[in-house]
Every structure is written in structure tokens, then in C-alpha cells.
Image (cartoon, rainbow, N blue to C red; front, side, top):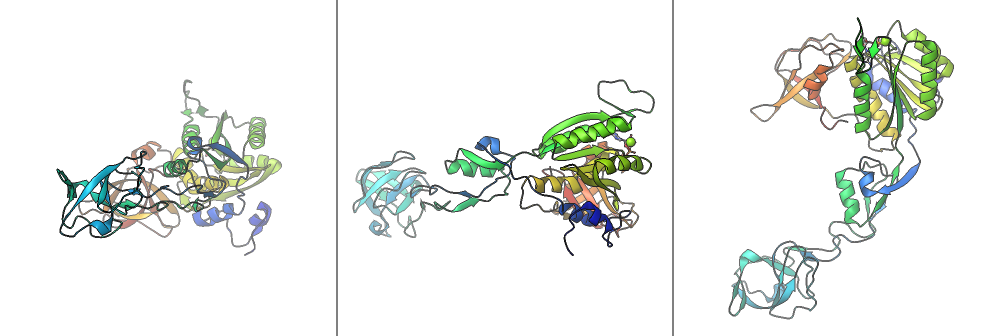
Length: 424
Ligand code: AMP
Ligand code: MG
């Protein structure tokens, strides 16, 4: 299939049903429109944490820079050792950072500590437990080493000078900033942060701190979105609650799209509200409205407003999180310049509570995963699974992912789970 270039072409593609779109298909459709950011900035290694590398990193040095000792002991010439035991003459010390300046001659040894540079002439280290200092010198026990080179770390064995150690598109995590520091690199090139603007829609929404009137609810979606986006390293622009008033919405969409790479809204895409938002967005950009074959999270809008990507998430708080994990997260990672973006991994657990499900949609139930006595994993649901029950997300540590065709399940059935910890 030819790649689709505009949303209009996409909406005409014949193998696609906007009223019952499978999760995988929607993800693939969105992917075709994602162009990663290209702007690069150089930042201090610590500030690079959570960013994405914009260039390969080659090592300017060998790590370690010198052959050195892997333990506290005695640097020796292997050829000097008698399998029955040997007495050597102590001629000096090599501490980490304070090498022995001479060379080892026949029959000599140097006291050496972990990380100490191997003295010239020495090829092996005898661990200190296998040697005793006597009146005659240093007595190396019989069979203290089995081969030349033992307990010696070689220059460049971690990283060779000139080797590519990190790749463009790699996320910078604690290990990567450590590696950069180990190479003596103070600054790293990273892609600029993504700017993400978001707002909630709905006349019933109140901000925290306000009194709730009849039928009103606190706006929680802006908080979960703030959290999910911040954990992904985005620059966030919280635009508050926008009432269901055409002029206000139009203004909010235009402001958001002009300022951000990605615009995310919640609410206003379900039946009854979508037509109205659709008209508005038709004027400002190109947006498709889908009913995804998933639960929670059926309605979803995706498109472009100006140069910004637009995700119109459902209003229900759990649906916001589930659609974010399934569609927005991947898209943001790709836009950030990540090259290794894969779906969230799933693994099997044994169901410990019954599940009610009708075939036809992928379901993401909230689960509590525990370790079984036999070492495997067991999972139960958090209970009531309504898409408005946000506390279920806080009580869960995983999603139980039930495929489209699955029906009711009884305890003992194997199910797929996705861990929430570390996901975003
Ligand atoms: P909607 O998609 O706008 O029809 O909203 C679906 C449900 O989600 C309604 O019960 C809304 O009150 C609720 N809802 C929408 N937006 C929010 C929000 N930002 N915070 C909490 N609940 C919301
Ligand atoms: Mg609404």
C-alpha cells in the first residue's frame, strides 16, 4: 500500500472503517503522519536525562584508559610463579589514581589495589587472600592463580576509543548519562523538547478550588495529562477548561496549535458533541473522528490543526489514560526522535478473578498483579471497570489486555498484562 500523504486521502482509503477501527490499525494510520523534531540543542549531561540523543556518540578515549587491577592484591609476573608457591620481593605500591612508577623485574611484586594501574612488567594480579607478608617477602600460595592475566582489567575493555557507544534516537536514561560521564563528555546533543498544549472541554467541569454545583465535576483530565506528559519529558502548556462555546473553543484550538507541536483535548468527541467540534476543526485543520474498537476509549479524534498534531481524547477519565497509553504515548516518543518505539510489552499472567467481556473490542481492564507461590504471576481486576472510575487506575498496577475476540473469562485463564510502572 502506498503511504498516505493527507488525512483526506486517508479517510478515502477503502480498507478502513471509522466506526469500528481496530487499535493496531489506528496506531499505524497515525504513524504515517509523524515527522520527528529535528532541532538540536547541546545540554549538560545531567540536563540530558529524559531527552533523546540527536547524534551518535563516539568515545574520545579508551575506558578504562590503562590496564588495571580488578581486585586488591599483588601485581606479579605470571612466569615467576611456581605452582608450589613462591616468595617475591615487594618493591612498591599501585593505588587507584597513584600508579607505581617503576617496572617489575624478575622475582618482584607490587602491592596493588582495585583500579590501580598495572605496573610495567606485571601481567597478573594475585588476590590478597592468597598471599601473606612474611619476614622474607611476600609469600604467594600454591595454585594462587591458574592463568596469566588473571584479575587484570584491560585498557578499552569497556569502551574502545573511536567506538560508537550511544546511538542517535536513543533515550538518555541514568545508564546513558553515566556512560557519557565515563567518557569525560560534559555536553550532549539532544533533540529539543516537544511542546504539548492541552485543555479540557465541558460546561460541567470545575477547577480544583472552586465550589461544585449540581451536576458539576472537578476536572481531573488535565491533571492526569499533566502527569503523563511530564513523565515523558514534554514541555507542557496547560490551557485550562474551555467551555462548550464555539467562539471559546475556536480561540483555544487556534492558540494551542500556534504554540505547540501537539494539541491534546479531552471531552467533546463523543456522539452528540463530536459534530459540533468536527465543524469547528474542519475550518481550522484536517481532523478525522474514529470510533476505536476498544474499551474504554471508543471515541478518538486525530488530525492536524495548522502544523500541530491533534489528539481529541474522550472525556471519561479512564478513557483518557487508556487512549493516551495506546495512541498518544507512541506518537510523542516518535515525534521526540526516538528510533526504537515499540508497543508496550505484554506478558502472561493467570487470571485470579472472573472477567465479563463481550467479543468485538479490545479491552483494557485495570488489574492488580501479584506473584504466585510458584513464581509465576497472578492477576485480578480492580473491581468495577466503568470508564469514569478513575480510582481504578490508582489501585491498579497493570492493564489486563483482552483481545477483540475474547469473551467472558474464568479464574485460571491465561491473560496478557502490561505493567503500569515505568510505562510513562
Ligand atoms: P464527554 O466525552 O465530553 O461526553 O465526557 C464524558 C464524561 O467524562 C462525562 O461524564 C464528563 O463529565 C466526564 N469528563 C469530561 N471531561 C472531564 C474532565 N476533564 N475531568 C473529569 N471528567 C471529565
Ligand atoms: Mg463534554
